[in-house]
Image (cartoon, rainbow, N blue to C red; front, side, top):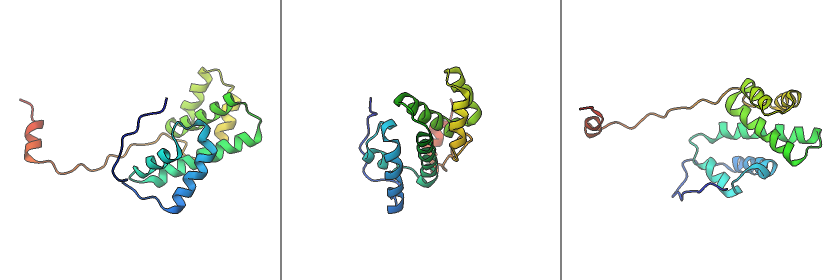
Amino acid sequence: MKPKTTPRTRPITYLTPAQKKQIREIYQVLKEHLELSYAEWVAGFEWEYAPQPELEIWAAIAEAYHRVNLSQRLNQRMKKVVFQILLMCSFNGESHTRASFKRDGVDPKFVQQVLNSYNGLTRPLGVVRLPSPKRTVASKLIERKP
């Protein structure tokens, strides 16, 4: 099931031609596992305040995915497992990924082989809180508890 997209008037970030080329290359490698069209995926990057770090993570995932698929003849189910391992590692780190796939019955040696191919972010992503706009007197009054 595809997620519903909300129409947006204009992007936050305008991607460079080099970034758009990189997005197309990543998309070509991973498209069988992405639920978004190419245009929707590009739009997602345009709504990032800083798309380059996100692009670097996806590039590392695509490179590792391609490397593992070249080294082994994988069926569709195992290709999906490789993608899931790489995606989980980018969000949760290696130790959590190993433990999770061990519970799912995936051979730990295979999981480690996939993780060894991944040169991307191997620690959980952090959330950056942007500074909030100045609060008005009215917003301060609304926040007060009676």
